[in-house]
Length: 185
Ligand SMILES: Cc1cc2nc3c(=O)[nH]c(=O)nc-3n(C[C@H](O)[C@H](O)[C@H](O)COP(=O)(O)O)c2cc1C
Image (cartoon, rainbow, N blue to C red; front, side, top):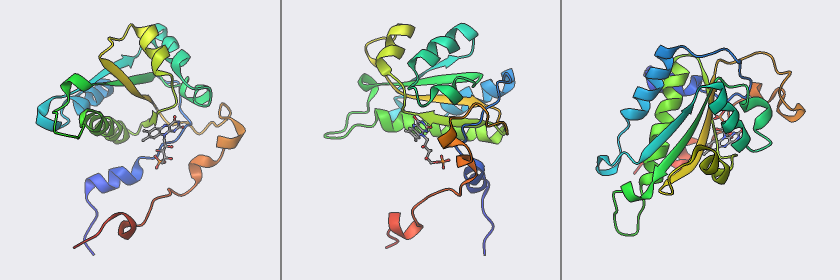
């Protein structure tokens, strides 16, 4: 049997755990995450993504206000919150198709992989209010906030997790089988 490649091993290592330590991230790690986002391919190289990296306590506290209640207890501990936005005007514009959100998704995945390589947790969240994010950070109308990410060191301490999430991190990953999602013709 052929050996698994580095990326598959990294993907196996990535797990969207919610137990996050409050420890600050090193500057070199943040730079690496930024570079991973920047190097992402996009349709016609339009690079429609824009990111707010909420690093200062002031910015983080604003970001926490935008989080859905279910995400607040654990995500508010993350030393780095990210808001990912996308610009429709930077879409590659193919008839009947739209790619700017797809492109943002690709770059978010690269962020998650870079974070995983540094042994960090990077959990994506749709559970936030785009309106609140827009208002608190004075976002331009053309920037559509689509995703937030909570990034930090993993923690064994589940004390801050709501009861229903405790132990959830130990469950095996649930994924469809390869033949359910692919036809090899
Ligand atoms: C677009 C998107 C939005 C998500 N939103 C949330 C969220 O608001 N809160 C949360 O706890 N997890 C969220 N997740 C994490 C998923 O629940 C998680 O990735 C999925 O259950 C698979 O688990 P795994 O990533 O550990 O393999 C989101 C994931 C994606 C890709």
